[in-house]
Length: 213
Image (tube, rainbow, N blue to C red; front, side):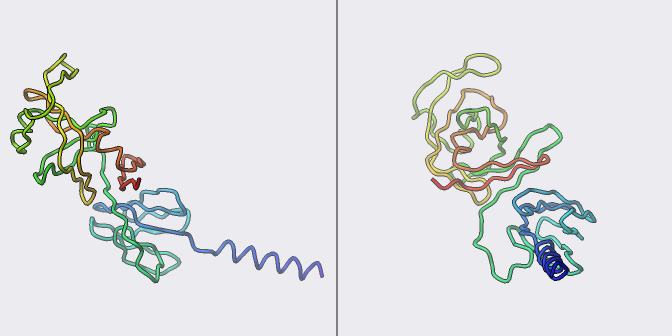
């Protein structure tokens, strides 16, 4: 009886050990991919293998080729390994930190493209009056204010932007400040936009998803 019981325990243990991990592609890059494996984030480069058995064969910004248990699959963003159904799409933006330790990207303000910088230390989206004019923001119709900058106090205008969009993440009616002059040299994407998204940072990669209120 003891031998039968021990054999049964080993059988169930083997089943538990062989249960497949929940693996989802969360970011795609040139020769690297960001996976979510049973809830944890793991960045793999071409040829690397995770302790869970995920082997990244190759990756491009469009797809990843993975091998698990001797079987290969081609996966796109937010696709689950071994899934027999298509998951509900999750709007995700993945940014990679640059050599200056910054997260820079293209966004659109009121439908016009502009370079921007993630700034979690800024309470509000900020741009220069020069940039506002280029984007067609009628900032002088806003509320006059005074803004503290690195070089001292500057005149500015509090405005509301119709829409700010980063990738597929669009936020309407975003509060912003326009500072007279050429500063800041790039749009600072502050918390008036970022409060509407979830931020997850891992290994110099920032993942943004919409926050549903």
